[in-house]
Each structure stands twice: as structure tokens, then as C-alpha cells.
Image (cartoon, rainbow, N blue to C red):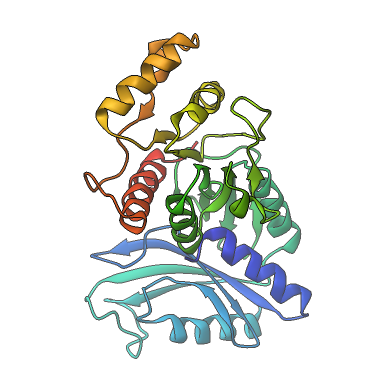
Length: 307
């Protein structure tokens, strides 16, 4: 999945190769559209691009327009679809999208934005019709919109999914989450999984764990042995996590909440734990459970909005 971070990384890489590039932002939609306002696309003068603004209908043509703007060296606003003078670039759905194309985006701003996002901080880019690109002093609460001649675009950190558990369910969810584009981390007592240096090996319940959850992080507990859960859940509930959930039946969840209460976790906090988890009831095979849980977590991430 191409994210705003993917596009910014693409611009960084093009610059490192000595290639001129352009940043395109979708600023308005008229009618239906495959992508929303604020979607980004990066284009290199050498040909490649990253991101999507129409779901594949016009990307090749838009890359050509971007290369034209790169050569001209002046930012342009452009309409594609209904009402556009570019009659050879059409949207099959009959709608229209408005774009702002900025050639040679300021790489210092791109680098600053990437650094903030890597530090798990939201950023707001200010893209002006004169071609300037700036980083706002504070992130805007809106996804994107015009303020005079400047389009303000807020980008939040990518979803981080911490998977704690053992068994095939952990592997299935990690595979699917990575394919979707989430940053993933695994905490497990399974020695064969922990052979991967990127995986944290849980030695005993309650042992120190590098568990850090921010507003764009989710914790999924996939333990069959529920003794591992209470220390991790108690720590997670002290943090501003986006979503916390644990595998098991309703009866298992009742016992889980009772165990947390016995460990001193008040009901007002443990009520934040989702259980049973997943949008597909009673999913039993690892792949279906992974799909079911990831869909629930991504829905929470998409619904969160902006700072």
C-alpha cells in the first residue's frame, strides 16, 4: 500500500539518485473518485512514480504531466476529468479531480517531515500554488484543505501493530499486516519465532518488555496460554494506545477482566480491551482470524482522524 510516507521516501530516493522530481497532491474531488482529498503522488523525471490519485485510471498520464511541469520549473494546478481542457485524460466514472503539482519540492522540508513521522509525530505540509513547500509549526486538526493559496495536508504516523502471542495466528497476522503496510512488532515466547532478530523473545510472564504504544499503535494479544496476558495488558492500558484487543471467547474475556481486577487494574481501564476480537465471528483458522482482526484494527485507525 502506498502511504504518504511512501511518496515522501520516493522523493528522497529520487533526489539521492540526482533525479528531479515533482510532488502532486489531490486537492478536490467532484463526484465519485477512487482516492480522497490529500492523496499524494511523487514522480521522477526518469520515469518512475509512487502513489496513486485515480486508482490506476490516469497515473501514467499524470506522470507525463508532472514531467512536463518538472521541465518547466513552475508549479501548476490542474483539473482532470469533467470540465478539464485535457480531453485526452478522462476518468471513466465521469467525475473530476483537482491537482496541485509542485516541481523540485524542498528536500529539507521532505526530510524534516520524514523525521517527524519516524518519531511518531503528525505533521502538516503547506503546499502553495507558487511551488513552495513548508512544514507547519503545529499539525492541523484537518486532513487537508485550502487556506488562501496554500493547501494544508496533515499526515499522521503509520499504523503500528504490536502482536503478542504464540502459534500460527501470530505469523498469519504479521504477514497480512506487513502486506497492508503497517509497522509491525512481535512479542512471543515461541523460540522458533524469536530466532528472528526483529522479534522480541518473552522469557517469563511479567519480564521487562519493550512495549510502547502511542495514539496510532494497536496491541493484539494472541495467546492460548492466558497467563502471559495480564502483565502486558496492564502495561498497555497505561499508554495512549489506539486499540487493545485479546483473542478468546466471551467467557475467556470475562476471566481475563477478573484477572486484571485481581492485579489492581480498575474496570474503568480494562473496559478499553476489545474481546472477542475480529469482525468475523468465531474465526478459527489463523488466516481468517488475521484478516478479521486486521480489518477491525484498520477501521479504528481510519476512524481516528487527525490531531
